Image (tube, rainbow, N blue to C red; front, side):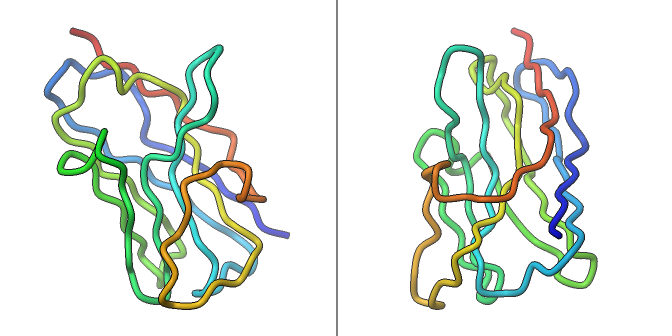
Length: 129
């Protein structure tokens, strides 16, 4: 059984940085997409970064591109999200997730939350102005 546990959230001032970690246990493999998502109350869960572990190919939407970086340490089975130049609108609960579907290495991992099957409990990020 896959388990995902996030850590690293907290409160920071605008312009600051945080690094989120997601420790994974159970079989993850290298051909299933992983991603970071965020959600604020009353809004849908939004994908902010995805990665195909086998190749390291990443995808980030324009809202965070250039500020966020997703990476994975395969040896430690840990997913990271480095967040720089944080803005108040980045405040949210952040979740890591794993897709059950096995994808080909040429595919771009999706950001639709509905496609991901395993979720962590979340870690809160609060950015003050």
